[in-house]
Image (cartoon, rainbow, N blue to C red; front, side, top):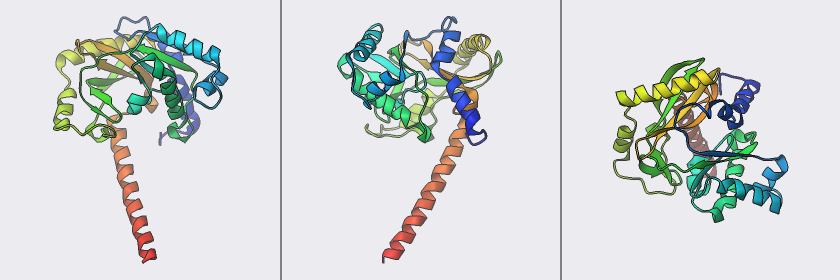
Length: 266
């Protein structure tokens, strides 16, 4: 976001809502998980986030919408899935944990970039058994995922979604040789690139502007379109390097500060 101002950034955030892009691409002939979008009022979202008492009509509306997909399901807002907190947010194995996962998801969305995200809806999606190699963060399956960038009808570039620098193990034990497994997951074959380029071009024809288009491979080999966002604010490998440089600089400055504090205490 360093190269754009907040006003422009916020414009791209709003345009990245599923309420904007899903209606434009949902009928494109590309595999997509079954999806149910439930728009909610500010009051209903506050109830579901735990900021106000949850009322029966809101509860019933949410359960009815989720049941159209069935459990287990994948859940997100129109903006965000909080996937790094997978076991407590976007993955909903059974109906009885749905409300608690919604609450965590909405609270996480409120904390993104300190100012939160403009949530307008909950999205319930078919749970896909992905072709994953290991789990990271809070139980998140790390799978064959790709990001394609499209602009005005054309595919601009593509790359694997998960760089090794981004992987963290919070609640799961670090698997042996996970870097080797990830390297294999991130290998793009000519056949895969041909197929996903065809899919991405179909999406590019259906929607104007600069977009990221994310695909994930299921265990049966099917590649699904799973997410989209404005390309101007989407992650790229270059941005990952920038993040790592900032993180290392911050760690160095913190160590220096702690050293000064310890010196003063002696």
